Image (cartoon, rainbow, N blue to C red; front, side):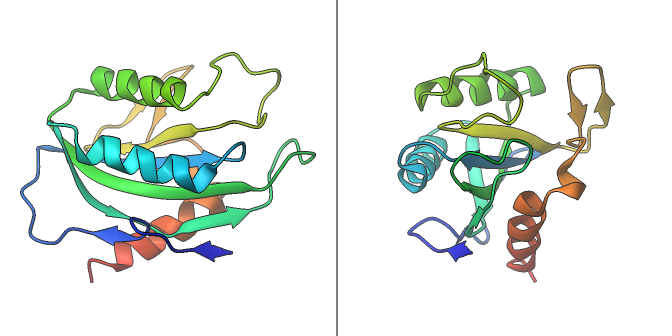
Length: 156
């Protein structure tokens, strides 16, 4: 199911950008998920080293992995930044904590108030044991592909 809100989808045409293009996949299934997404958008929009270029609609979908939990809300955010990769991870973890996410989960794919996945960072290709850029599984997740395909179509 597609959900449309004030900032989802959003497009900023002809804006100045920074050197590094970033795509985040965001998701949540606990609390007021849509409100959390809107608040996250505001935080990013007010960050001095981030320029939001676009967002997708919010995609409501059933959970995968552990299925005995509420449906997920997912979307993607494309922005440019002057922040380095380490600072992007620091910012991701900060926002997850700010919106109530516990870093230690009871089990894989457990319910959460906010999950931020780094899908792309600049044109970097990194694959370590704990991190892969581009995101290792994004191509297999409709919760990323559906919003991202729509979002990239906004620029055509």
